[in-house]
Structures are given as C-alpha cells and as structure tokens.
Length: 159
Image 1 (cartoon, rainbow, N blue to C red):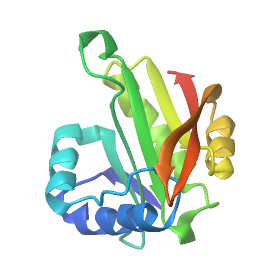
Image 2 (cartoon, rainbow, N blue to C red):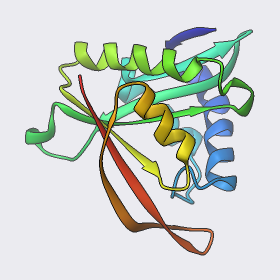
Image 3 (cartoon, rainbow, N blue to C red):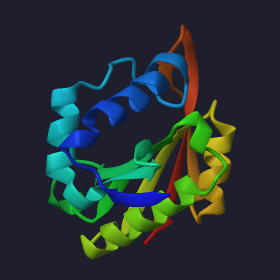
C-alpha cells in the first residue's frame, strides 16, 4: 500500500468511492454527490492535506482535511474525512492515511483535529478512538438522511 498526495488523475476514483458512500450509507449525512470539478478544486486547494491510498496502482482510500470553521481564529483547527473502499477496510490503510495526514497537518501549523462521526457508524467511532481521538460530544438528531434523524459523534485529537 502506498500513501501519496492526491492529484488530478485521482478525481474519478475518489469520486466513485465517495459517491458510493454518499448513496448507500449513513457514514455521511450528505446526499449531494461529489462532482469532478469540485473534487479537482479540493485536491488542488488542499495540496498535502488531500491524500490517497493505493494498492496495485488503484485508489483504495483517501483522507483530507479542511479548516474546522471559517475565520482566522480557527486557522489551526481542522476537520477531516477518511474513506476506504470496502476491500481496504481492516487492513491498516486508514491508520496509515491518518498518520500521514496528521503529520502534514502538523507541518501546516494545525493544533487540533476534529472528526464528526455518524452515530450510525460505531466502527468509525472505534477507529478514531483507537488512533487517539477522544469523544467530546454527541449532537443528537442533527443529521437527516434516509428518512430518519441521526446523531453526530464529535471527536477531537490535539496534534
């Protein structure tokens, strides 16, 4: 498995992986699919804060981070997304992606990293706990998808 900075050629694979999660899971509350144009812009804008994991030259996961909230007071606080293809789960790809993303964030001046994990994703909560995140809040019924309200588990790691 290789971890590297995402580039324009990765847009179709990242879009396919992310849109599958959007369409069929409660891992994310969004129902809006990622567009090639939007992903290309994110990859360019985020640079070393948008990583892909590849196996046999195929993208099998990604991790990206972005400022937690707007404004200069939040310049050192980030939120992230990490997604893996089903065949890459449980093989350590998520840990390696997150370790590299955290290193890149530290180099970028980040101090705090948040994870907003769906309450319907207990494996996501367990994963973040295993890599050093602390659960700081549960926001009840803040996400709506598939005709039901869902909780958001907010987790944090001081970098």
